[in-house]
Length: 479
Image 1 (cartoon, rainbow, N blue to C red):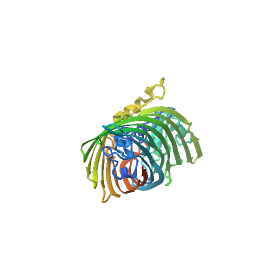
Image 2 (image 1 turned 90 degrees about the horizontal axis):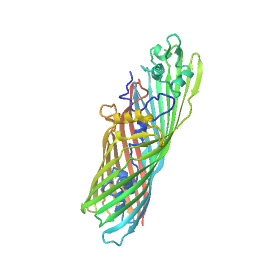
Image 3 (image 1 turned 60 degrees about the vertical axis):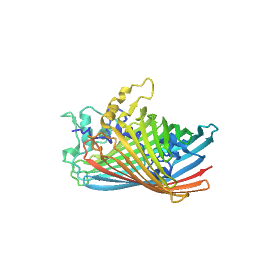
Image 4 (image 1 turned 135 degrees about the vertical axis):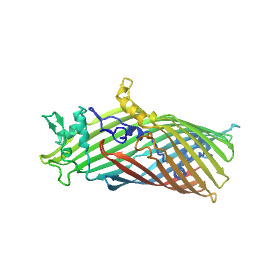
């Protein structure tokens, strides 16, 4: 029986072409911002603080807090460990990378107006999401097969050139001309095969920023950001079933592969304000419009099999598809308390309703009904979520700082779903040093998340644990 109310990672596509699913919607909506090392060390709680280029993507009023011009860039070395537990087996896969997730320039223009202290402009980019992961999921003595799903789809006339066609052409989805039905050898002989799935993801979403902000009497700050996002995502998967114990009469093994590449751009607008009711207290509010994406998918599948009747290989057609997507709008409220020249504490709260994401055609004459099913699933399976950012900084002297932070990202899945408790937590700490217009910040950050995925519709759930580490360094100059 199909468990569609629980399957949120991967959707088998019926019909003749690749299509979008709710996993794609989450990829384009659930951000984990990477800006400067200082912001990361303080849990990215910069909505009310400002004075850091990361704030251009959080609360653009923070650009108005700068009192001098500044240029900075950030280097990051990251690694991700993915633990998977499936059918009693545990596997671990790792992936490491190095990149530059942030670069920013802020120009400060002093004002002669009695009420406007300065007018500032910010240019640069922040990384909104990093897709780099590698997963290996392995299990023995399976009690179902992905071919069971192919059999069900084929017998219900839900035939796809990207799935069932490959199994038919490689001889693992035979047709019984007497009964008029498709079947598979693994099911007939009672299962017990070994399974392995490998997933490699690469890419990121960068936000290129143009910000403007004004400082009114060093008490009220108002700013706006135009963000242009660049999307680059690649995913390669391989799913293997193997009759290692020789329990199945004809079937030996098969390997089913998928490749997806998504590229495109999106645009959004952010507006925000910071207010100081007293010198030590700062209150922030910002609103982000949805990001309106125009995207292109490139997709294909391949399959090779080994049976007692011989070896076969078949590849699907190449699918190219253009479409639009907009993610939900977002609101952020924040507060910070500055303790003289010695330190500060800051808190941000983000609110976003993930059920408001929507796919559509990319041209005026397109038929949006093609996306009715996936848009309905987005509303059904996702919900509103609140994310919390907490940060602190202590300055033992004017040149040196010690920082710490915590972030909590609530699961976007609706409460009845298996991943409703798939929350993300990050812990961070860092140091900073500044002198004569030069500054350097160093941060260590750890991200942890537990979730479940299904390798195919009728599979048992695999338990996943992500442990991601970042070592970040920002170098900057004030002038």
